[in-house]
Amino acid sequence: MSELDDAPRTYSGALLAVIAISLLAAIAGLVWCSTLGSRLSTQQAELADANQQNAKLAADLRETDARLRVTTDELGRSLGLTQKQLDQRAQELVRREQAEEASTKQLLSAQQQTAQQVSAVSTDLTSVKTDVGGVKTDVVKTQNDLASAMSQLKSMRGDLTDTQSIIARNHDELVLLEHRGDRNYYEFTLDKGRKKPVGTVSMELRKTDQKRNRFTLDIFADDKTYEKKDRNVNEPLQFYSGKTPELYEVVVNQINSKNEISGYLSTPKNAPAPAPTGQ
Image (cartoon, one colour):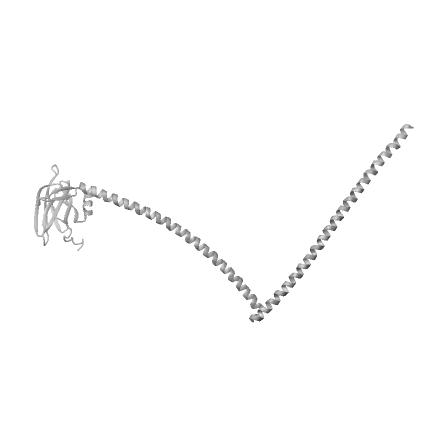
């Protein structure tokens, strides 16, 4: 009997626990429903207030639109313009403002481009100044080198006069003499036994002596023949030529072979020039 008495008591305790949990759940549900209802009421009030404000704004907009139309009509009547014309004027003003804005942008772009070009020109000008300075330095150096080279040119006594003649002993020195600009120079190569025109005169090689660097040469000028016999290399061979006779010089720089020599003819600056080839 004690076991039977304990069983009903156990069932009664479990039933009471279930009832308690159900009550708690019901109370929580009531609280949540109350809170939700309060929130819903608040949102409905806010929505109603928003609708009221929207209605007021719509009314204000309609009023403003009506006033704008009245003002537009009055303006049109005062100017004698229709609504279409007013719209065209408004569009024209908008286009003008857009054009002015675009023009301003173009002006700013042009100014920036001009500034860039001015900067580039300034840079180029600085570079040019640097180059000019370099050129001046090179010119001074060239002049100094030329003066030094000129001082090294050999001066020799001519075979006719007691004066010293500055001669060139090779092609490079002849170029230096040409830079002086006080005489004319004609380079030549002569073959033995062949008369050859050089400048306004003619010359013919008669004999060579390679071992002793000596030679014999005939010069033909103004229907005269000048024999330069047994002369030395780099010796100024002088003669006079022209209507008003002036001093000419022949310098043989090298005996190339027993049948060939080479050198140059020097004439006064105002001496006649040779006729062009083919005339």
